Image (cartoon, rainbow, N blue to C red; front, side, top):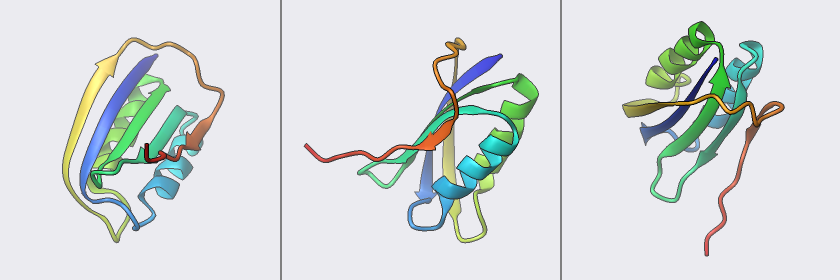
Length: 94
């Protein structure tokens, strides 16, 4: 089992990036979350089997059809098993 913490930049907000990532993660039985950031990036924490995480990373590199991904920064972390499903989180401004 593997955990990633990823940041995706480019045209990744307002193009169904979060909902498509959630759909794919659920299909792959990946747990975690995704959220938009105020700097127009998307942040993802995902946990699952390595081969399934690899599939998710490949999706993050291209995104849904309306997206234009410029960069994907992925850090591998220790699996924690803290999630029950994959969800969309919402940030709130201070």
